[in-house]
Length: 75
Image (cartoon, rainbow, N blue to C red; front, side, top):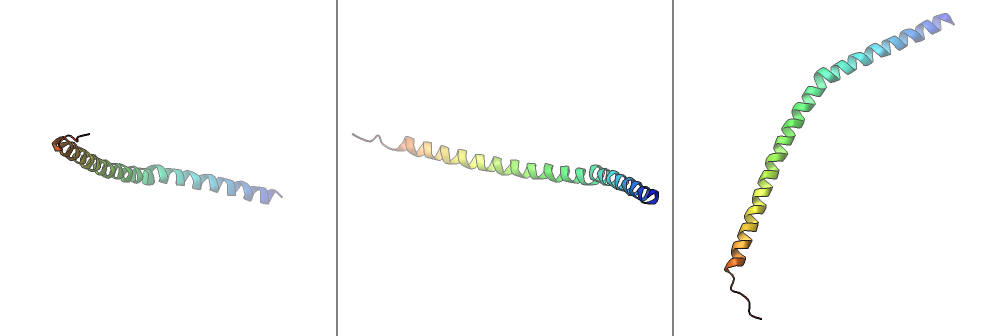
């Protein structure tokens, strides 16, 4: 039974080592790339939102100008 317990403890140590390596890899390799991509994505979304806001403002201005040029309706 002692041999099996030793193997089980070794197995546990190996899992801990691999989890430590995985955490390090995620922190050092994956996270920075994910942050970089997220930042780029947010810049692109921001640009598209700015363009959409400009289009809405243009439409609103054109509508206001058109409405101000209509003769008053008679009731």
